[in-house]
Length: 115
Image 1 (spheres, helix red, strand yellow):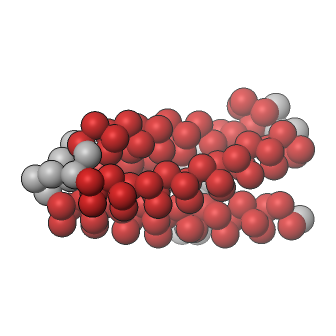
Image 2 (spheres, helix red, strand yellow):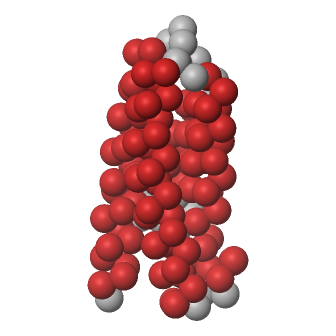
Image 3 (tube, helix red, strand yellow):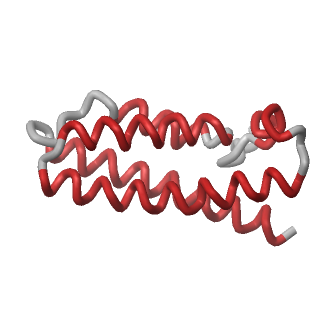
């Protein structure tokens, strides 16, 4: 069974009409956003800021699901109930998973943009 692509382009096409230029713009925005947000989570854990954790994780979840990056969305959903104050190890593990899945999406985006 072939592995699913990190981004479901058919899902994205529901919002973009499948227009390649619009797909590219949406994916570029997500590429920048995922990097910034995952990096911000490191600081949130250091500051022990549960409110910012929930806000950023929720934003990642919505953005990922919107573009069809479902594995990133699932990782964010799993991270939502984590409390960085009380569960620092779990928070750091969640960040590592988000970073890994986000990087897979970014590789996909770069390949998509180079076609």
